[in-house]
Length: 438
Image (tube, rainbow, N blue to C red; front, top):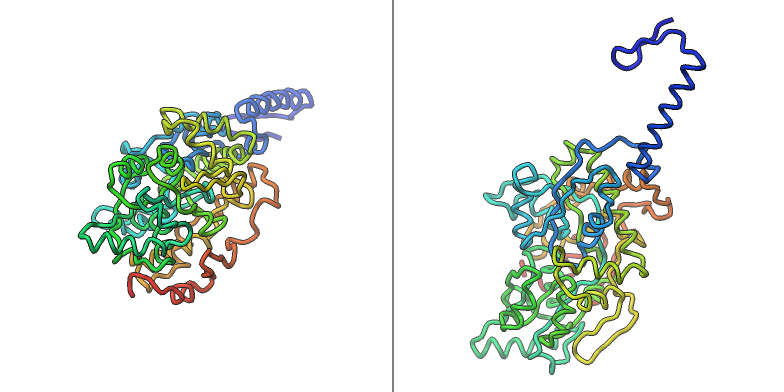
């Protein structure tokens, strides 16, 4: 009997000797594959369609999973040695380069503010309002952003309660001066944290202050010359501000919402569709990097790596404290060993909960970025690709106990007692006193 195997290969009467010889070749190929892909789970999957991709990042501590994946050879480990991790000047530049795409000298994906893929997907922040199909495939971190205030307000005693700034801001405005609150991108996470904090203290972010956009690495320098009164940004810039004696941290965002989602790994939908195996490889590399970043024993090395010139160009001293949960607020308040450190993996951090994306959309409805009639669930289902995360986790060998059973984390509670039920965003929005429509 004759069988055709592969292309143009004829085998007659497969003998035991042929079988053993064939098995030896196969075994040799498997050994070679294991050397190329040290993860046994990944060796059995389909290889990436391409060996590289272009991923953007902003100089922030929460971009560490991408930096570490590159530095530790994890992209190469999963078959993509040519992945480039490219520094972006601002979130606006990240957006513009995603619109271009990697094949047109832009980027294919990025470390990104969680709401940005939604704002881009719907054309809210793109040139000529042209939608760019986007996807969120992982969350990169929880917690450890900061709301910092200029030194001139130290006497107010402002902290988690923003209301202590209300009188001072009103007096400054009455004197004919502008009160400026800086964030990193309209509708982005820092914009939303800042607005939530101010509004909870009775300060209307649209009426009582002027919000301005400043790229994260430029925050400290701008506060130093008096360009803003308060800002919200990720680390290491709040800690650097304190070390330079320019201002102080009123609150970390983990105090506003304990265990809150922050940055995401966003990819162009076209890249995912064209290169599904490469997408999984990128995910696996980043997820393994997140596991490494999570380990407390790796924090010192992590700080020394991401502080390098090509990454953040920041002294280790400006990074390490808040990585470990040691917070010098800069106003004679020091907290050691807190649980407000940046989380990268444990507790489902990497998994992109759809319920979290629903909150960001609800907040952007609150402040007028999306219409009140927006179908939050439908939009989240379009952009959030938690299914791809689950596939990658399975191939990576992530324990079932570490994979969330549901795409919803359930009802969330904030520092001011407000609650968000992802099954009923309208009830949350109706409970808020200060909002764009008020």
